[in-house]
Image (cartoon, rainbow, N blue to C red; front, side, top):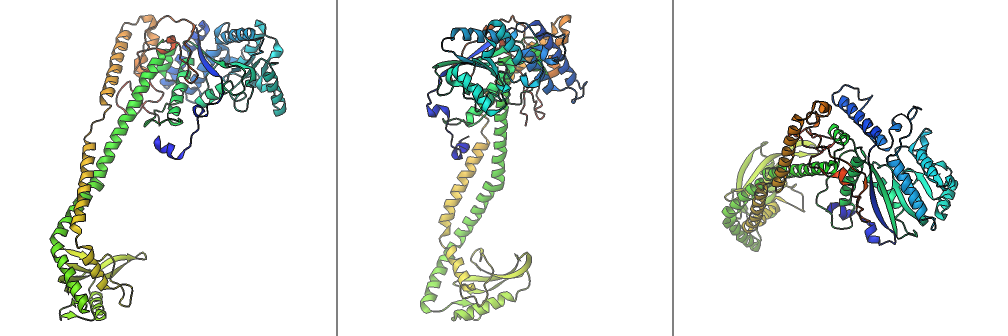
Amino acid sequence: MSTFHDYADLLTADQLDLDVPDCEVVSVAVEATEAQKQAVDALVERAELVRDGAVDPSDDNMLNITNDGRKVSLDPKLLDVSDPDIQPMEGGKVQVCAEKIHEIWQEHAEEKATQLVFCDSSTTASGKWNIQSDLKRRLVDLGIPEDEIMFAAQEKDPQKKQALFEKVRKGEVRVLIGSTGTLGTGTNVQDRLFAIHDLDCPWKPAELEQRQGRVRRQGNMFDNVQDYRYVTVGTFDSYMFQTVERKARFISQIMSSGSPSREASDVDATVLSLADMKAIATGDPNIAKRMELENQLTQMKLLKRAHADQQRSIRFKIDMQLQPTVDNLERLHDEALDDEPKFREAVEIRGQHLTRGICGLDLGDGPIADRRQAIHDLVGIARGLDRGETREVGEYCGLTVMVASRNMAVNGLNVFRPFVGLKGEHEHWAGTSAPDINNSADSVIRQLDRIISNNTGTAQSLGVKLGNAKASLESAWNALNQPWEGQKEYDDLTGQIAKMNLEIKHGQDTTSAGEDGQADLAEASFHSDGPKEPQTSHVAAESGPSGPATFPATVETTDVPMPDPCVDPCDGGTGMAGLCM
């Protein structure tokens, strides 16, 4: 996270301190109708067929079922809008939304307060029966003039659309209905905007943020505005809002103006599993808690894998880098200690030769005074070696002179070139082949002089390097032996889930014959439904301007984990959600 902030400049709303109204997010829980409950039960049956492989994925799959679940939460008629025998549902969250819009329309008639309604799942663009048109019908029935209710999508021409927005800004149109796309970026109608209504939940957090961005803008005459989010209890609504909320929390960990977190927990695609659907179908009042617990386990798994990866990386570094470095430095340090007396003596002898003006190379016939002659003779010997041969040929400053013919790559070809070196207690070779005899910039004598300089007084510096290398190796071993700090929390969480599964299994063993159709949940997804409890429709607690909506207790609280849509095939455990990569 910190690395991202090193090259990314973020300027967030909390830094700008803009003069925008405070927005209260109000979650409205609406009891599911009998028709909706039956529709959800039918979706569970479809999910079981998909799970059992009894239906071709091209005909039906979990994504299709999830989309149909979103429709059911609005009105089961959306499953087949072409059937004239299916009438629009009486009641439900569309009716509750209409009544809330009418209430605000009446209360703020003097200010001509305006409202926006968002619905992506069923729009007028379909050309068939849809929720947006049905909502307008209900608003007109409640007494709102038809000319004060408009659809954002009805004006395709940009100029006409701006004229429509101007009517909203003036309060001539007081209810504007559209989707996130038609009422998203570029919609500036905030002048009298008092409330927005989310009839459904979009797929992405950015879309939910765009919706709220229509009302939380500069230039709004109201200091306090409201964002109503409608949730049908016992349908997919709660799952959708909670999942998008979790995605938003993940994104906020990165796109933050404050100190970034070290880890961010990602979330999987918004596709329900069979276990999720059965929990929803039974009206499980603890669905949000189930998701939260399962998400904690997923994040702990990620952290545990990261620790295991780090341990493997440390082990690899020890074996391939740190330990070989220590071994090599120990060898070089020992050799330097062995050779140091002879090389110090060689420095003194070389100084004496320079004072006398002689080269001092002895190739068996006594010291050679002329430097050029010495170079010529030594290069001649080196070039006369057989391939791969190494030979001691003389003495220089009290050290044995060695020459060798070594194989090396030159322009992609393997060739043998002469090398020179000196030997005290150990051999020390020049880093490059012997220069040409006519090379005035370098020579074999200079190579020998450099070997002497480079190996005089090196024991101390090698000792420092060896100490640092050993310290790095010891630190790596200590890190390798460190247990994962989250192991206790991971074990506790796993134990909680195991205990819950036993309780669920015990509850299934006592399930009556009439409920057998829903008793196979543990077999399907290693989880089961929680105990059924009465549900009541109510308006949930409101969150602050910057916080997400707090959903009703009848939708959230649970002690049973809900699995993620993806199960890690690498994890042999049961009941554990994995990461869908």
